[in-house]
Length: 628
Image (cartoon, rainbow, N blue to C red; front, side):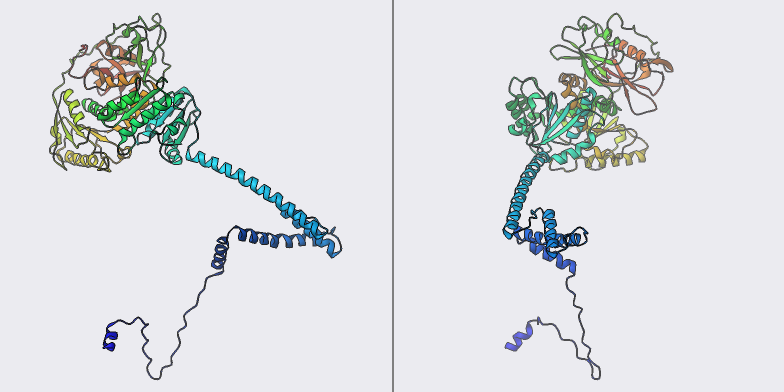
């Protein structure tokens, strides 16, 4: 039984080679024996020496130094013609050379004297080593603290950005541009993120040759201790952004509470905050306190999307209007405004375009009637290059330059239908805004390819649901664009499409046609936040400007104001638009998709078919020259 059991277990021994046949000699097979090379042995010896500790390293270092210095010193003495002739004298000279090289005294004489000199040299060397170590450690700790971004910021009048999100680079870039217009200032960013990473991402947005400083500090914005290091009480404005994480609006509320705890109740600091969900808006406003502005990012994105549907071609105009490159909205309060009429003031702005007025209590009135009189404390809202725009006195204001009216009548706006593809938490607000704008909405409930999109006047593509459940919100939008382009090739017909994107990198990937507008709602919201942070009264003006009803940014054919082929300066079209109840702020030439906001009033061109005048005026359903 033992033999049978052993036969069933596979053998672990090396199988024997077959025996050679008779008459053949057996040659032994020699395996090449290779060992570690000299370099490997040296590395192994170094590793063993290092693990023995500091004493072994110091001993081997001393032996290595002596092994190098002593022979070199002996060679130096024996080749010196002035060296002593005796062997004892040469040995003493060699010792002095070794001692001077290794800073060991080098005294000669009795052994006790030599030992004492070596002892004193070692004490001196130990003291210097400790001193160098202490200084090096202190400098290293200070540099590490600077690298961690935990030092105190001593600035005044700076703009403080609290929190990190995908909108932070855009906000910081616009704030840097705003400070560069003034030629000074600083932008400080506090976020719970590595300082080097933040600086690396924001390095490209720093304007060249500008006296503007960008400072990044690491810390939780909701921590009063970290918040105190960036001196929010001395800041000119504080911007609180919701992070890209679950519970973002709750973090904004905690940050606002920490800000009030550090700054105090009575400190006049401009605070602009943003929340993603409108249900947290009231709580955030209570935490921010009176005088602060809290913006609903989702509501703002929905409004901008509705505006682009109501006015096809408006996306580039909005982006140019909201950034600090070129012209943007400013509120001017020069001396002599009270008592003057708005129509007179609009004609007295040689380097800007008047848009409306802001009352002393902050209430905006865009495109008011020309006979509106400004009261003390009121400001003039203009589109200008910077806050130094000119308002001429009443005596030197030029008279209006009139142009003939066009002969063809304006056509009334026809009812419109829109197809909505995709869905997210902003969808309901988009549908409500389109309904208020007089657009009948049809929502495509199916998935995949839309059915007959060419039968609609507009196609609206919403980004996918953002959050943890959808890592790529722009994926459904890009897929819908592919189907829309394929359908347009099949039928030869296409409808104007407005596509919402959340990532700027998706713009280059989007298969957009000539009648497709790509709207980066997150970027536009960031631009508006930066604008409001510089003048808190602009929040109410933008709220009125982007409403679905009322006076907003409109695109009108230039031939609605002047006959086709008319050669006139832009100032004449400003007068013609004011005559019809609108405020002209720029135009889009027929040969370019890029708008020109606030061009020189003296710029002359032939106005014809294809030229578009950009105005602040009534919606299409309201007749020109009438007001609600």
